[in-house]
Length: 230
View 1: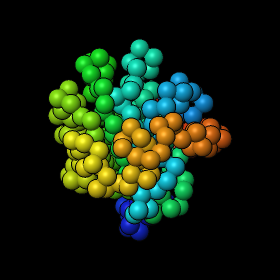
View 2: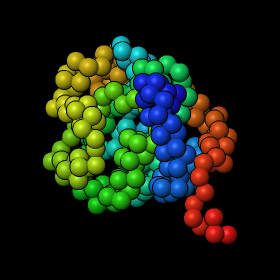
View 3: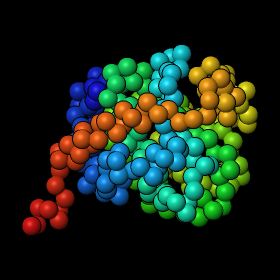
View 4: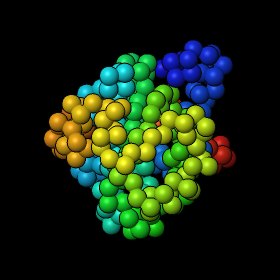
């Protein structure tokens, strides 16, 4: 999967492998309690999940309902960590390794109460992990139902993004604009689609059934300076 993520450039794939296993040391907040069963609160909230069907180009579609996040129940750190977990789960599938991932960020109801709970340090760790440390092909990112408050957040996030990622972000003022990229047949009703709005329980079940693989993942990689000094 590392070769696929770097288009079979062996040196680039090797560098990605090193970054992948170094990530828990470099960004410890993103990998603390990095198992699905430690994130049951996020799962029960139904904020991040892959839709049941792929887009016409074969991409797996990750739906992230950031605007539905309740900051009183979940920290920003938990939310971002689980998003990374979902991406890690998706790339276990060879089809996703080849075709990549499309993300839909639904920002409906995103407010100041959300923005004030977001630490830019957490966002930096999250962005760097997704961009530089995971063998993922991010094909497109669609942002819908965004407000002026979200624009404040995006102004802070944008400098952290690579030019390639920036060029793959689409902002949609309405669902009809989104439908030009993703068929209504595979979208939930809240996005003008044909599917119901219930989270994809099959994805969550698969994630929980692979809990042990996330535990195993933590047993490989580099040691931190703290461990080396013991």
